[in-house]
Image (tube, rainbow, N blue to C red; front, side, top):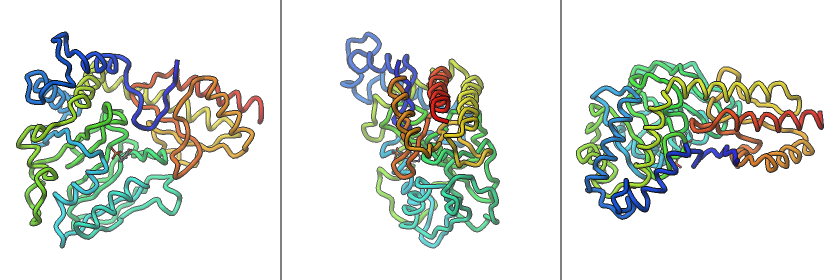
Length: 355
Ligand SMILES: *Cc1c(COP(=O)(O)O)cnc(C)c1O
């Protein structure tokens, strides 16, 4: 059995993959492939409506939130958010917790003024900055809830701000019960914890929109997709179907049970890393991500042994992001505890042989 620790596209439940594979060539025994069906067909209408209403239910989103399945990845939200919310004379506040935050800031600067109101840059992004100044004067505050690359995460306590709060939740959405009404706009690329790559979930309070003076290209205006229920143009039908299936899987497990399992996996791995002298993580204890654990191995002989044993154990996707090096274990919802146990066995073996 392969143990898939890739950060994204990442592990999905086997039953989701099986149903997707089947539907690709023959949707629900209709003899028609989903891949060759119109996005205006009854089948796809059921899928998109099902995905939207199940997302609303699982995330407990009140009526004032619109739910969209868009394309262009979370990276496109870096510019769509300021394009739709920020006038040239306005200032948006950003919390800088790493590469994804920085990319979001760079895009926002195209549309208006930005201010970094908190940052963990001076410590290589190994913690979550908690102190914020007053925020009444900003158009919105933007944060990244889970920093996929560094392994830091807001542990269910988000800053209280006096303006709309925007969150990039790409790598931890639906990993634990969260009161989503703390946020006004949320976006998440599907391929980390939501479903197969190809679509991006956007949740937005309608009242935020229509307040900028610039012209917005039709496809980049949230209101276009709200008006047309995410089928203004041809959406990525397979990806959205996969998201619906995965949402059904989440519903079946229960978000509480998923969260418990995520906690168990993360605790096991962090405890193992902490107890081994050859491995260390620089992430502040209270900010350690439940989704992506990052760690380093200093000694080269230990690195080689670790990588060799990972290969033997069929552990894949364990290398750290190319910008930070080291190792990273991504443990999204679909990963079973036993995969983390296999990784921990490998870690202990390295320690036994070389420490
Ligand atoms: C992966 C990731 C992104 C980029 O997502 P794309 O869909 O590839 O554009 C942005 N933010 C976070 C937090 C991510 O983990």
